[in-house]
Length: 323
Ligand code: UDP
Ligand code: MG
Image (cartoon, rainbow, N blue to C red; front, side):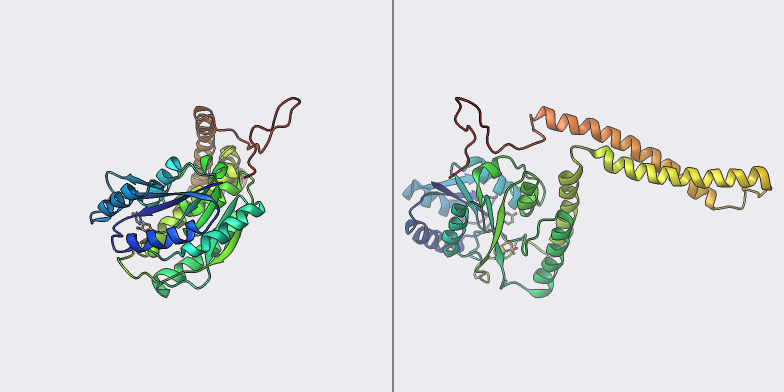
């Protein structure tokens, strides 16, 4: 079994030597083979130089250097593309995650889980700007996606390669991999991991990340629930809105026609018209989204189902994902 450790990093020059040393100690003590993939996300300090030096000395090190800063999600995505391992482990490169937790993650993978995520149960970050928004965000994400995890934001995670190869990432989406993957029917578990304060360098994020995460959550929720049947959601909103508007207009017409109630001083009329308009718009949008959904799935040959194995006479299971 080959492990790929994926480490996105941006300006972490002080952390790199310590991280590499600690990581090597842990990995060398394990029976599995390993490769370490650093993704330099457009660092402007000496990070890239340090990584290149490591790569010269250690053939197990792969360095992917970005032309500019594309963000942590993009860096992780690149790591997944270059990873050759059966199991892929993602980690922060700022020493906040503890490499000594890796064997525990792997033992869970060996138990049969497809994804193992870390839970920083004693998180060492600022309360107001970090831990509080994260607690709220985790609650919201858990209840909307139906995937209950305590800590979506923890980068320390282990994935079987089959999971990763089927997930495409955009925006701030790396934290939603378990939620996205749950739509594929994968099994996952959560383990408590060590979290350490940042000793060198600075954090690359502020409070604005919370908003971006919530926006991405809406996309994920939509993709999970309705990506193969968008008309079901748009159509439902459209029908209810249009139906309600139509009903209101009908009643008002009736009153005008048979009871002589004037329409000129009834603001409700505007609401009825608005609701009908919105209704038509939503239904048309749903139909367009249906077209889009077909393009999306068919142009990428994306199936609407995920097969674990095929059993057929005279054929070995061709998609055997037992590690
Ligand atoms: N990172 C990155 N690209 C970015 C921002 C961050 O590769 O645009 C890396 C960063 O170097 C670190 C990890 O992502 O290894 C987590 O970032 P950070 O420690 O700043 O986040 P925090 O722990 O404060 O949430
Ligand atoms: Mg950090």
